[in-house]
Image (cartoon, rainbow, N blue to C red):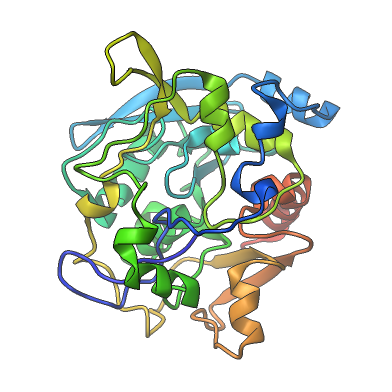
Length: 347
C-alpha cells in the first residue's frame, strides 16, 4: 500500500504508508468490486473452501495492556511462523493461506493493534509492534519447536517486520517481506496530499469517524483495496471484507449497523519518531527475503529507474501476474513460493 509524507516529528523520510488515499474516477470494477453481488458470496473454488474450513485456534494475547487478536494453525512443537497483515486489514487476510503452511509449521496470524479484533491504542509505535509480535509468538507456541519463529509481513506489516528484524534480531530466525515498498509516495499520492481537503473529504479521522452502514450489503459494496487495483479473485475479497466489519449504532439511533473494525485515527496516532532512515539500508543480523508482485508499485518504480532500497543482503523474488495484494491476486502462487522458500532457506 502507499506511503505517508510526514509524521509527528515532521520527518519526511518515512518508508511506507498504507494510509487509505482515495482517488477520483476509478472504474467500477476497482471502486466497488463486490457491488455486483448485492451482498451474496461469489463462487468459490474447492481449494479455498477447504482452507477456510480449517478453523484456527482463536484467542487474544495481552501486550502493553492491549489485547492482540491471534489465529493459530498447526501442531505445537513444529517450527513457528508469525504472519502480519497490511494497514486497515486483519489476521483473517492470511486465513486462506495459513492452513497450507500449517502442514509443516505452527502458524500464527496476528491482528495488529488498532486493527481486526485487536484493541485500539492512544499511540501506535513500531517498537510496540515488535513487543506485541514477541508476546504473541511465545504465547501461541511458536518457540516450542526449538528455534525462534520466522516472521512474514505483507505491506505495512512487512514494514513492521523489517523494523523488528533490524532492531530486535534476537526475536526471529528469519524474515520474509511481501510486497513491502520503500522510497516515498508515488506521484498521485503526493498530488492527493496537496489537495488533501478535497481528496480526503470522506476519509475517517478524529472528527470524522468511520461511516456506519445499515446493512452488510451496503458495506460490502463500499469495500475496495488500497492502493486501488483490479482483482479477479472476488471470493477472497469478499471473505476478508466480511471479516473487516463489526456492529455499531446507527447515527440516527434507530438500531445497529455495520462499520469497519480498524481505528480511523491510526495515522494521526502513529509515532514514527523511532523509525529508521530509509535512505541507508541497515546491516541485518537475520536472513531476509522480499517477495513482490510483478504489477506492483515496486515494479513501476524499477521501470522508472529507481534503485531498490534493499541491497544484496535481501534476496528478491517476483510473483507473476500479481499487483500489491499478492495473497488476493495469486494466493496459491504465494503459498507455493513460501513453502519452497522455507524448505530450502535460510541455510
